[in-house]
Image 1 (tube, one colour):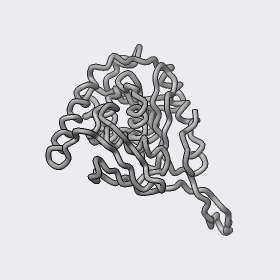
Image 2 (tube, rainbow, N blue to C red):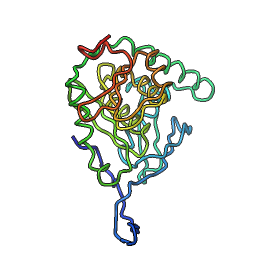
Image 3 (cartoon, rainbow, N blue to C red):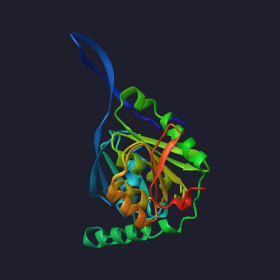
Image 4 (cartoon, rainbow, N blue to C red):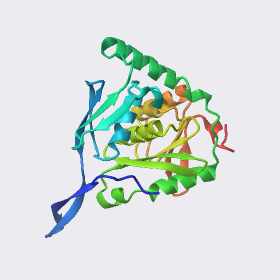
Length: 256
């Protein structure tokens, strides 16, 4: 499992490291970061600062997360400028303005209502296996330490793995990949490298995914939101240990 990196993923930079009483000067790699403007029907919808690869997935996922897109069928065309500074989407029928904002909110509310309906269950061993795959999946993280990783999993295997400087962006790239490839998310799990605050749970819910497996800690508001929305939260998943916080019925043999 390796992350998708069609574009340049890191840049060389001269580093002066001080260790005790000695200076060391060497060339290291730093992860690249770039602002991207996103337009819908030539109206600017937002600006994302992200890693400059998988930009089609980034833009499509952003529009799904914001409620502009409900499905792939809503998207007529998506183009990225040659320099990667902007994405242009054609969404027939999207009203824009105040009417567009209302339509976006209605789409988000519809997505949030679906999570509780998922019948997904997985085993403890599957959780361990997916956490190990995430740990070993990103050469870019090992080389730079500057990115978050997010994976989409089904039946114990990783279907797609995305990395980005922003944890929200990594999830949006996963969403966009599913949108562009017409892959449903309601029967799949998210495997995530970072912390789990409430905005991450909200984004997972908008993906319609019922389960997140994370390496780091959740927050109290995240768990309150996950419990309400029907999302199973597993955190501190590494070295064959994990904490199960909400909706334990999705983990086979977990105490209720």
